[in-house]
Amino acid sequence: MAYVGLSDFHAATYDPSTKTYGTPVKLAPAVSATVTPNFESVTMYGDDRAVYIEEALGAIDFEFATTDLTSDHYALLLGKTKNADGVFEDSVDDRAPYVAILFRMKLAGGGYKYFAYYQGKFQTPGTEATTKGDSIEFAPETLTGSFIAREDGKWRAHVNSNDVGAEAAAAAWFTTVYEPTPAA
Image (cartoon, rainbow, N blue to C red; front, side, top):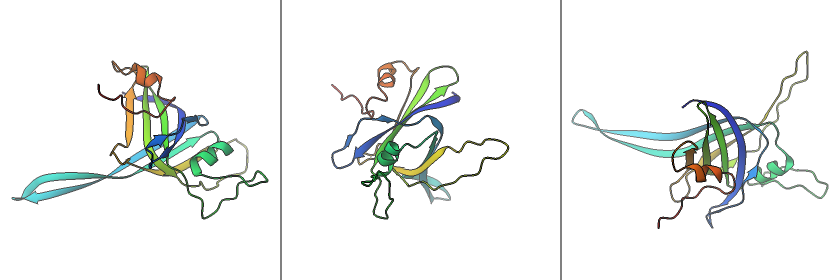
């Protein structure tokens, strides 16, 4: 199914030691997202042919742009704090927290595909700007980061809102970070 939209970026902190997520926070309107899982694939040969193929997931490159990166979202995503004057002073000692990112993409035939990436960190963005000339050019706020699999091996969850039985999961997608319903 083709995608015709992107919306509703949310972020939630993740504590790997307790395996718990904070409540998802809605970020500024979504502009773009690029997620690239990096797999290493190795082939074993024997008897003059390929016999086995093994794969391993490495880091997942994650880049997203929003219409704005508010001070609260800067602090949430990058672990930054304001000083007594209300000013951010970035330090080499700053450490971004682990976060989960959630969003949805509109499907061409109707409905949405929802995504949750479970554990990643973002880097402090650079600054790029141009002067306003004869035409106006928007410069969205872009963050890049790396995601990894959690200790249990899970790295992403996704659901199509049109799939039978997925309605409840899709409806609650942005209230908590998705975790499977325990088996009875």
